[in-house]
Length: 126
Image 1 (cartoon, rainbow, N blue to C red):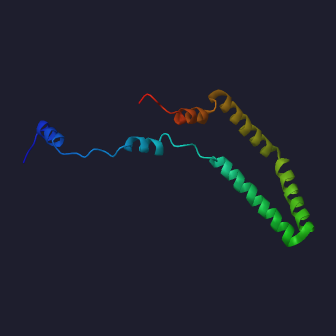
Image 2 (cartoon, rainbow, N blue to C red):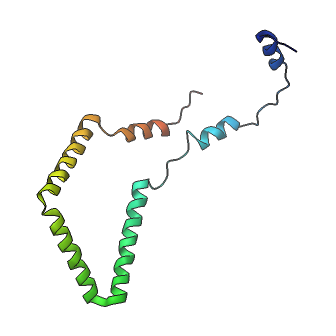
Image 3 (cartoon, one colour):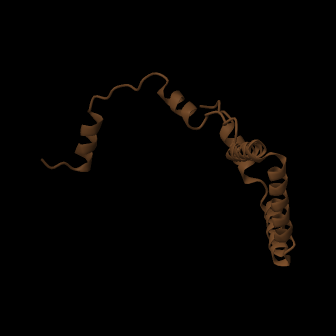
């Protein structure tokens, strides 16, 4: 059986279709476009996780070795940080990266805030 476009379109339109459930469109929009913003962003969760990991590490240091191991570890971290930040090349690259980040944020502005506020607005015109 061969059909041209007109016959095929009429056959498709003649098919009996069910009505979608009541509120289907609204439930899809609530689950996608109008969903509430999460309580914590990814950066918040990463910061909380890092702070928790450091706290557990400090408690473990105090419990396992007492004060001397804790002080020795802090001293080792301090000496490493001072050697790392006393290198002129490292400081130059950190300054270049920071200046680039500030320069880009001044010219482009915060992009995510505009998108989030647009996304979270509810449209009442539909």
